[in-house]
Image 1 (cartoon, rainbow, N blue to C red):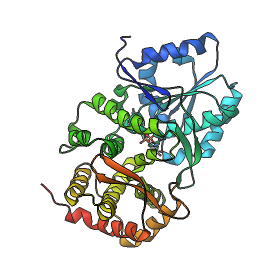
Image 2 (cartoon, helix red, strand yellow):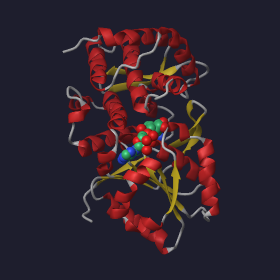
Image 3 (cartoon, rainbow, N blue to C red):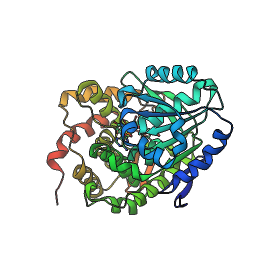
Image 4 (cartoon, rainbow, N blue to C red):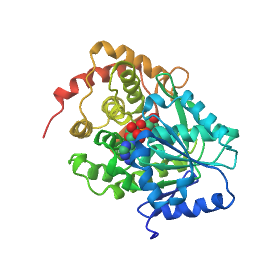
Length: 368
Ligand SMILES: NC(=O)c1ccc[n+]([C@@H]2O[C@H](COP(=O)([O-])OP(=O)(O)OC[C@H]3O[C@@H](n4cnc5c(N)ncnc54)[C@H](O)[C@@H]3O)[C@@H](O)[C@H]2O)c1
């Protein structure tokens, strides 16, 4: 296989991006195979159907890996699913020298990373992200974990993967709605760290974008620049949470109330609309740029409709946000496009105001 890929360092983990990444994976696996360590491959039913055959065609050695298959979806990112993994790994002879390969989107990477990291007090794992969300965000930087009932990512730990192999070819089978979900995080990366990238991502709808590999590489570079400065999220890494305080509230609300809940990215996109408004109200974020952000989000994402009586519940959910300090709501906001500021205290009244404005935005945002 031609050695055609880029190598980046994200918080001490080698991240390989491009067409030839699986040659590198084969090299990594050779030592495990030589010592006959048990290799597990975690996938969900969709990535088993769509991605596993492509992976095996490029890395035939993995055909012998012990497969662990779980049901797809955020609702399965739970401790109960981890228990099934731990049981299967124990029965099939896993130990601290075994390896878990996570083949899937953010749910597989988050859950598999967590399950491996606490099994026998730490078993190595590798991420092979198959969704855009996982390629540019969830597989990188060592945040692993599961949800606690409807509350997102409440149980988890920082734990580095041994390597991340990003092969954009998997995106050809990713459903459009899931592609959009990753695109929201890509927009967020641009908004917090790279105004030039924001220009490249906007004005045209995502459906006509073709240069995905370049975009993925740029997005990973933005994330790695931030994560390398602050791997354990004590400060600047919180910038990656722009849109997520209110985004997680939308996501939790939707999981509780909708038959077909919002994806993580759709929720973050709606959260960014509100947090761009809060940035305008507290940090002087220019109102024209604010409208540009809202307009470009709504170019790709449908406005998620909430009744005004839902606002109390959404505000209540923000109390559980992990960034809060001493009962105070803390957020990342943007001063300008490409320039984020973390650790901004936000009054609940302003969150409420932003949600009322959000309900109005679908009507009031200027269209070109
Ligand atoms: N750890 C982090 O730093 C971090 C960052 C961002 C998001 N996340 C987490 O990531 C999760 C969301 O990730 P996601 O959007 O990838 O969701 P996901 O893992 O649920 O994947 C979305 C859907 O696409 C399917 N799929 C994935 N790749 C496919 C492919 N190539 N072809 C066909 N189907 C495919 C999956 O089976 C699933 O049904 C959330 O749980 C979020 O909290 C974590």
